[in-house]
Image 1 (tube, rainbow, N blue to C red):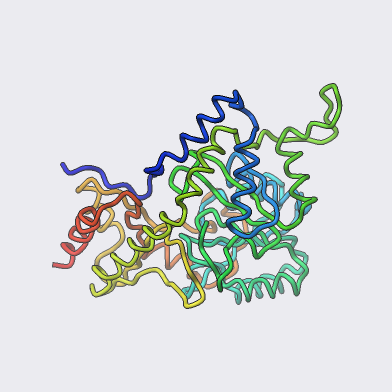
Image 2: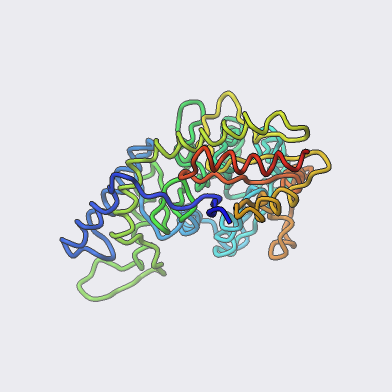
Length: 370
């Protein structure tokens, strides 16, 4: 059988940037928990995206958790969450004993529908925060969502876990809201094997998050704690990997976009296939290239056909309102997220793929139309 083609796997730099920073950490004996790589990664990531401040954390989930805590979300508070996403977007809302309300997507962006959000504000005017997602590297309709959040004096948190390097009208996602979060999980566009980052222009809140994330240890000679803390800081070794990966981010984005254009060219003319939407105001990183189907061939047909050829693909995220664990929470919308989920497939988008690999994927899919 031919070699495995992955959906999106870690891709270390050919130049060995990551090892340089790791070796420096070993040489200085700053293995854990913190050190120059952590400070450097925070500084360099913030500079890259155009944020004033950043704190490196153990995961993107931890970053969302800390953002919610920083704005005072607590027991019983209403938080509007994008319905079409991964559960990690919503779990921190539950950590804070708050109440998620799921907001539908629109077909034009696949992300939070501003009209559904406006309806939700009328139903829950006491809402405390909004968590949007830039799904698969596609930017949400930020102007409309920002307008609603400002009009209702509500905090906006951007889950940009999948959209590092995506621009909305020339500005990077993750920097429009009060907080932005990024993920460096193994399948993301750059990775630290596991980790995340919280960015904000609010220096005081970032300083507070840094305190909480380091077990909330008071400034005292002895071990003293006046608040509950968390073991959420990124290690100096992982931050070193991140610093090296950041140097090749633009290369990775270019390859992801190349993959999307390749699929668009090869598959776009097949009946009943539509590529994920890219708007004029959106410069996506194309983290995953996705399609939707409207004919007799269904997502599972494609997934299973690729699987037989040792090629990994996946369904679109299952909406949160359909998840058993969140079944008791409200949903506002018309079922667009469910429609995208039912008809969508995430195609292999690994930046190590060759043209031969891409043709191999496309040939399997085209074979289903013969």
